[in-house]
Length: 251
Length: 195
Image (cartoon, rainbow over all chains, first blue to last red; front, side, top):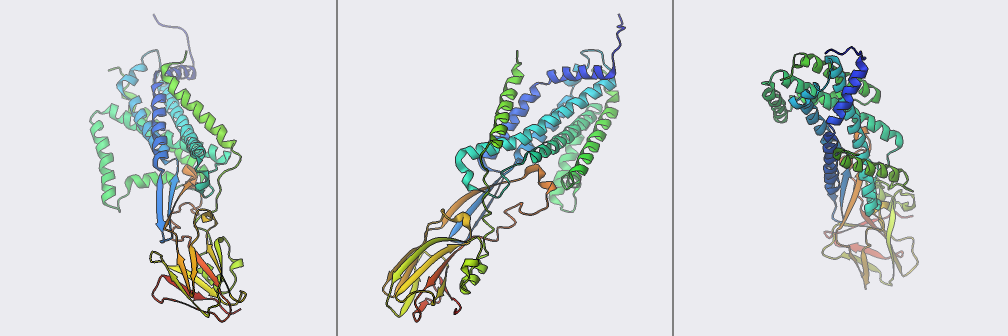
């Protein structure tokens, strides 16, 4: 029997998004575990160290940053986004009536949610690291003035981190969609990624992924960075939608 | 009822929230002067030679000694384990029969952490024993992800580690007293300009 009830696209996508959010609740647990591992490694040895001496004095300066939180969270987002394109995640789309567009919108909202949560935990992880460090009684040994993060910087840091996580998630989603389209790409894509990285390590004149990364990491204007990240994420999402047009049939 | 999937994330979210409140409620934040930003050691020596130590910025006195001596000569020696020690000698500022030595370091952050030298006067010989090499552990924080939007200054201690705090001894002796040291020894005597 066909339903005569009509529903708007956004309402449909919204319901689907909420459903997916609940179905993928385990991603929150993995994100938390990833954060705790990053915190553990950061507190264990910092993220950088310099040692210098002149016979009278030997000074070791250990630097603490959110680098571990960033790397671990980006890895989480990349892997989670690929998993979202997998068969089991795809089968969730058939739990109720939906359209291709509503599914794409729901997935895009899910990736944006991952980005927002990832950015938030990266920024707050940096604060947690500072508080733990401070209460451990080493406040007097801190040099420089970057221990304090003004609230404005924290907000901007959250936004920038969220955009990096979203960018990574949409890249993972795009690659996952490609792999779903042609299974052979499951071998070719990682091989190309690893191969290009090895090539770059061996030959300093070849800078493929580094150039692509620098497009974002070397941007010194926050406004232009936001535009770049949003545009790239949008293009990757659009590419994913185009690629997955023929992979909607339940297998 | 909270799903089992939400228990761990919610507990972590609570910890993050508490950390956020605690961080912005701290009465004051560590903001020590940069250890690598004291007076350059060569500049400190220059000012000591010119008798303008009071004008040097970012220096601190580690120790001060006074000895009585009626000798006409003074030989500055050091314990065998000493590394190079710079001694600036001035023979204009003290009273008769009095030897005054001040130890300075060109980084206020080090003050309180570094023990002073051990000095003793044995007849005509001033013996300097430096404390064993002091190991100091310090910590710095980075602006993290926002560093890419900052001009590249003061970001990395790795880039400015060429400068290290060092110790200078300022020796004031009575006019007419001859001061000498072993030419090839670890003590480097530099004579201050006549005032």
